[in-house]
Length: 312
Image (cartoon, rainbow, N blue to C red; front, side, top):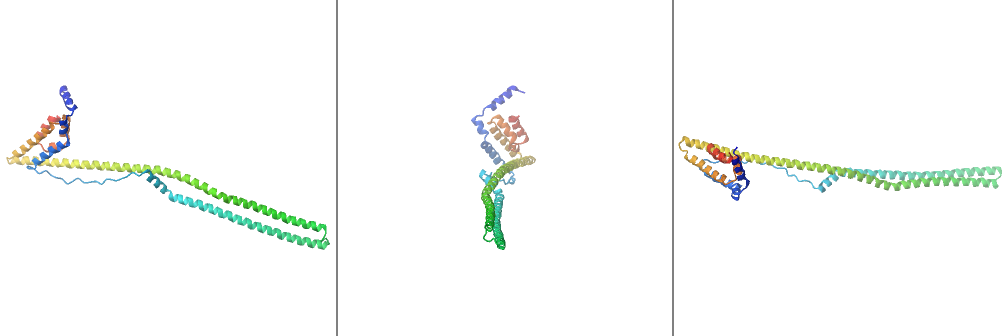
């Protein structure tokens, strides 16, 4: 290795001058290609391949937090409506059951009070018949026994009434408690729904993220494929063009009229050499290696001469 040569090359590549930047610009390269292609048309028509196929990208817009939250809530809307309906039906069924119990208790009370009255009337009749038979109708004994019967009837009715009032009070208390029970059941449902919706939001966010990534990955693949198709198309055009020029040169040689083609290649070489010579060495080397245009528009001898000068 020639150390001095390598150091000189590194120094040459260290700083880009304004003229070097302009020479390496896309505009300068396009201008060179246009000049060479225009001159070559007089000898060989440059082939034009069909346009590369186009690919449709996936247009995906990520959902907002509000959209995701609404979707999560909507996912459980039917469940919520059904649960609320079940709570209301359950409370109403229990209310009807308690009201029916209240009616039954009142009916039972009235029947027992009637029964006590009937028993009292029967007892009074029996007592009157007995005291008359014994001649004690106006005696203190008859009065006392009559008072006992009256007291028994009053005590029985009082007991029945007290028992009924206790039952009615318990039923009323349970009916009032139904409203609180409904509130508690609704609060439990709200908590359950909040947990379900929160979990659904995370699920939808993850799904949305995956879909966005999938769309991006697909679109990137499409872009890469489109770029490759374009590059392959350009490369094939240059190859076909180069083959056409080579064929033209061979035909000219066979017809002993190869001067025009030789002059064309020489002119191409000079134009390329003129542009590459103005560039930074690393830019010139990269360009002649990567761009098939140079190889397609030179003979093998002139291409490798140019290659050795700038990339060797």
